[in-house]
Image 1: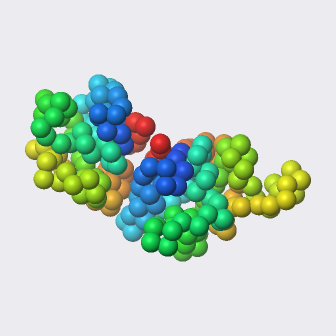
Image 2: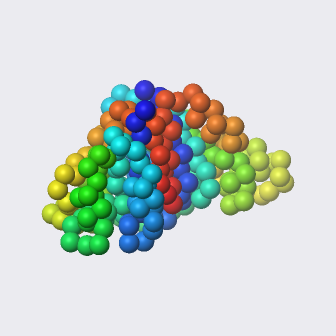
Length: 100
Length: 130
């Protein structure tokens, strides 16, 4: 049973990313969308959280990262997906949980 | 795969309403079936036909109506959430004795049972929210 988690809030604005990270099980995927993409950036207080988590897959919605001008600042190991990639992630995982 | 969506955020509020449209288009492009789109909470505001966004801005209402026509989507507006926000169709207008209605073509008003059914019948239920 695998779960896709979506986070759409900036980690500087809300606890959604932290809560998700704390509860996501090994082997699940966290997809960062909308302002959630800021969690995927380096050079700030949240950068280590992704770096220090090895058993969860992290993805970021490319269009939302691009819209915010942070493509060049994305942390290593983060997969960039487009909307069709988002759809594929939904299909590949058994359930989807949105952390609003 | 059958995919259902729940949209909790109004248009132009932040980004969720836009994300939901993009996701729907991509899901259809990937050959999936959109089982239902359920508009809940402020999401019901996506169903008005009276809004006039600036011409140089995206028109979310038209996008939904167009997608609905092209793919025969089931766009369902939560009745309780709609009535609180003054979103009303012709039948409700008559029943409630109101003087106008504002639901766009292609949307239908119904109850929470439609969301539950979507959760049961669809393979995935994706929530786009505030």
